[in-house]
Length: 250
Image (cartoon, rainbow, N blue to C red; front, top):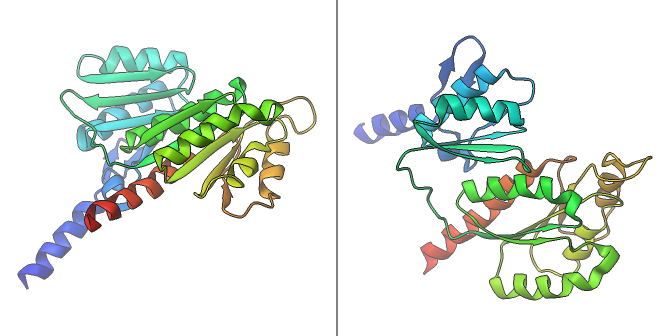
C-alpha cells in the first residue's frame, strides 16, 4: 500500500501544472517526464508574458529556454530578470536561457554533431545547439561545409567518427542536399533541418524540405522548416538515452 501511495505521489508530481494568470499553464516537470524541457516560444507573446513564464519555469526547474526571442524582448527580459537569474541571450539563434543563480546544468555524456551547409544556415543550427546543450549534451559544431565545396566535409567526417557521436543534426537551405550526403557517410541517425535560405521559387525552405523528404538515404529524419529547437531536442534525447544505457552497462 505504501509503495502504491508513493507511486501516485510521484505521478502527481511529474504531471504538475503551474497556472500563470489567464494565459498559460506551465508543464514544469516536462523534462523529468519526457526528457525534453518545456520551452517558451516567444513569437506572438507579449514581452510581459515571456518574462513571467521564464521566471516561473526557471524557479521551478532551475533553467528556462525561450526561442524566437527578438532583441527588444531580450532587453526587457534582461532588465526584469537579470538581477535574480543568470541570462544567456544568443541573438543569432534568437534564444534566451535563464538559470537560477548557482544552478549547474547536468552533463549527460550524450554527444551529437551539428552541421550547417552555409553560413546563412548557422542561425538555425545555433538554435539546435543551444537546445541540445541545455539538455546536457556535448555538441561538435561544423559550419559552412555544404556540397558546393564538398571537400570541406572530409575532416568533419573523421572527427565525427572519432568522437563516436550518437546522432547528427544537419541544417541546409537552398536545395537542402547536405543531410542525405552526411547520412550516406555516417553510421548514426541524421536529423535534417530545411532552412529558409535561398532564391525565389522554393527559397523559403520549401525546396530544401522536399529534397530531404525525398531522400534515398534511409535513416534520415526531417523536421519542419527552420525548426532548430525540434531537431536539437530530438538529437539530445537520442544521445542522452544512449549515454544512459552505456553508464548502466559499464
